[in-house]
Image 1 (tube, rainbow over the protein chains, first blue to last red):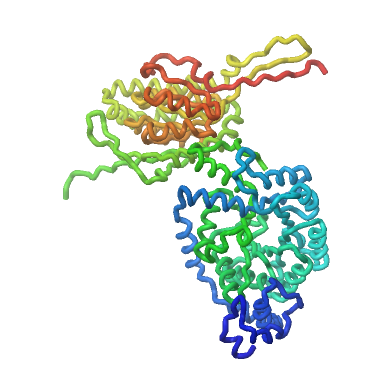
Image 2: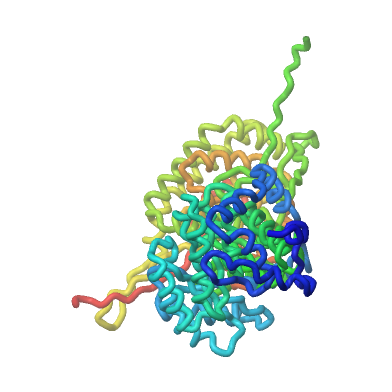
Length: 350
Length: 289
């Protein structure tokens, strides 16, 4: 890298003279992610070899564990009331990826989930639809049909979800299957075994290959932070996914405990913020697993606002992967509007 | 050094979901004796405490109503035993808050223990009285069986701090309902001590949830809460009753209205209070196939 690249933080639209730089060596694996030319520069720096990648990831500043947890805990005490609360509840509804990922999923269950996604509260048309439904790949065509004509996207998990234990060929076939079925978004899992044993290049290549297989579909990369052990690893995996071309980075599959936590979300949001400063690419964050109450959801929104700013308070850049959360949001919303606490039978079960 | 011992004063808390939390609001109020002297501070429950109590009661309902009637009776009998074991503490609290003599307090404790035993016996017998096998013109057995209504909000009597409280609480839980109870506003101490008895009597957490605080603040929230299935307004002030009844309409709660003045709790009980919070389920079963 020449001196210009070392000293300049690339902006979203660099000066014309920089075009030369963007054509510097292609990263590992070949596929460039995230569209922005500036991403190519970071890739060029980190992706020339496995050793470069390792140096880059291990050169990231460490996460102060106590500090991150204290920061998340202090933000969680913030009180959101009245009109702000109502705004937050409706925003959270719009950010939900309504999820069902069970072995027992049937087309009927997916269709009723889709009906709920289109109109979460049948008694109140003012409630906005959710962002997406998140399902297994074989049910994508069912969901696609059920959601035709609505703004709700179809997200499909893929790449041997939830363990990610399959060959790359199988994983890519899984992705193509979902894309052909009509999935608008693909939730892939990283190979945690490879990541934890330090084979970062392998993980990066996999993300890039999946990104390529996604075509027009958005790619969410699941880090499964519950298995990554440290916040340093979460930060590294976040960068790895973003460099690989992720449109979203996602905390968890929901199959492993602990799933999403506030400090983990904080670390990932900081990574997203720093990556945006570095490359200009806006990457989204999805928190999934264990978020059941409206109170939790509002806490995440506070952390988003305080860490990356208002731009991320939008379903295109922040999502909740959840199922039972939606009912609690609806109950809290009806409490805000009517003054009386709602009963759990006032809203449909998933 | 002074011979005078520093008195350890209890800080009373709420009883929600089997635990003793402080009020979410952090508020408390002074409880005074009948002669106006300071007794203790009690938690001033808020509507969020009430919401938490309803959630706890709802979560406990499946387990408690699903337990065998015999088992519920045993638990209630155990409550009577535990209450009996703490009679001196109850006697002090009742006589100071109600301004009665120790003898009168002891008599009301005896009656309260007997009341638990009475309802403990009823828990596996109420189905025989409230249920029936019905003659029908067809090849069917036809049964009507009583089932608990669900989560019952109870406004406890304002003057009889222990016997009155037990007389409204025991019939609700004996049949398998779970309860959210607003204790007497000015005489809450025996109620909280009763909560300590319940917490050590094998009663599953959440079956009884007890809040102290202002009835005028909490009762309307309880009456409007759509996850509450029934209301016992025995201790509600007459000025509030119409408003509470109206709020209870939104999800058609069963409402047990208060009598014109607080009844004499020492009188022998009847099954009336149990039957007020039971639903009837009728099943048709084909014969002989």
